[in-house]
Amino acid sequence: MPDSNDKRLGLSRRGFLAAGAGALAATAAGAWTPVYAIPLGSSGSAGGSGSLGGGTTLPAPPSFPDGIELAQQAYQNWSKEIMLDSVWTCHPKSADDVVRLANWAHANGYKLRPRGAMHGWTPLTVVNGAPVDKVILVDTIKHLNGVSVNAGGSPATVTAGPGATLDAITTALQAQGLGFANLPAPGVLTIAGSLAVDAHGAALPANGQATTPGHTYGSLSNLVTSLTAVVWDGSAYAQKTYSRNDPQIKPLLTNLGRTFLTSVTLQAGQNFRMRCQSYTDIKWTEMFGAKGASGRTFESYVASNGGVEAIWYPFTEKPWLKVWSVAPNKPAGSREVTGPYNYPFSDNLPEVITDLLGQMNAGAPGIAPLFGQTMYSTTVAGLAATNANDIWGWSKDIQFYIKATTLRLTEGGGAVITNRANIGQVIHDFTHWFNERIEFYKAKGQYPLNGPVEIRCCGLDQAADVKVPSAGAPTISAMRPRPDHPEWDTAIWLNVLGVPGTPGMFEFYREMEQWMRSHYTGNDYTFRPEWSKGWAFGANPYTDGGIISGALPQSYRDGVPASDNWDTARAAFNTLDPHRIYSNSFMDQLLP
Image (tube, rainbow, N blue to C red; front, side):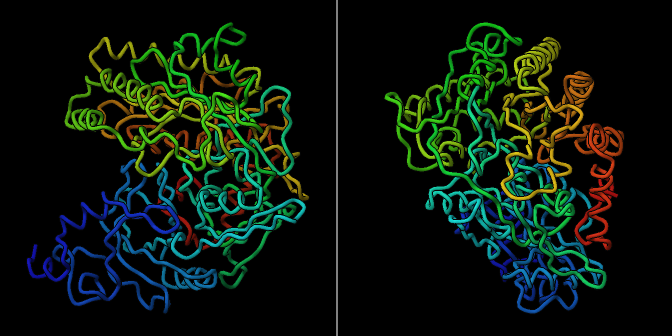
């Protein structure tokens, strides 16, 4: 590498890759983004007089729109399995800038990929190994992040730019006495990114508890009352606003990044207080008891409280169970919290755990049992040390608990759509299958999975939850109800995590996915992917062509009208973006 260029830039190529792909910086919005941008026209960019790392930068985009900041920057997804040394990244300041970008991309043969918090696993934004010389990532967080609350509306609403984070949106809502009943754990997610993959939480009503007006226990997509996207109008790309009663909005509500949202309005309900109790003393065989089993079962906690999540560390006997409930008044045994992220021990890992991670990454997968046991011990000790076994506060402060510094693992799994009465049986079947397979591989000296099992439940995107005239549920949301099975009202999320690079991990995920698809079928269940996580496992995730072109689309044809299914959503995306400027090589396969 030419030393002169390194010195001019003040950063070597090795340093650029390490910093750009591994280091993260907090923005004012609370989101995270790779550092070390190399602006267009600088000595380190292809448009300048120098080069980075001996001429490895990308060619400068021709006639790029004036006034829009553009730089080369590294990219990484949540698990760091999709990492780019450098990709052009721009920062539009307004929706009009996005329109200019779209028409420029069309005229010059470029792709635009919206970039939010990068908290995902899938290649919906960029594809590992694919050329990026004609790709522009469009950052939404820096400028397109406005939030405005209309507390006096009927229903009350919040309007946000695509890069507004859930943290920012719920903070603004809380100031007006409003909130959301079902939130994903990471508040860092942008609203456009959340809608792209039908983000959801772990919320259900307790037995006999009604859904408060303005809220939903389904996905965030089900809260949308209107949105604006930059779409093809027949002669150019332009902004168009869709109301919830317009049938054309339905595929856009969960869009996989196949469009570009510039504004979204969501309904909200009256804010409420919640309690979250943690249990670490229940054996998994009791917790995951079959349907109707006695004892402290997952099923029984859902019935009496509502929201439940189990985190079962590998090769341990007692999962970490979180139990959420609505609690208007502070219970005597609870500690009041006034902000989110109340499990700091899971965000700032002790050295013993990071050392074990390093050993597994260095080729010692056999320490997986010790890793799981250490994670469990750390959780038990951390809950006690922070007095977090029983906390109480406003809805967002209890539901947000994953930060950008939380352990980054890969995930596989999906959603079982079924009747609430089947929760116990679904979880019992899966956990016993999983335990048998893990023990089978352990007996052979193999440890293909070394992260926890995560089990959550939430409701579906019910029409009754929407408090404005509505054309229907999001077309390809995993939480879309099935008209032929009106008794199905629950999504059960079954995910398993692992350290990236673990030998045999993807083979295990493939085995697990095939079992799920064959087991959860028929008159009692259906299986759908969790869009943001791992699916279609072959030798690698997102490579099983039979699932991508067959089983997966079919799961959005079964039981729904032919006038509103996977095929009509695909056709809508192609009509609104006929030049496929909002696509990539993987999306061309998934949504041709």
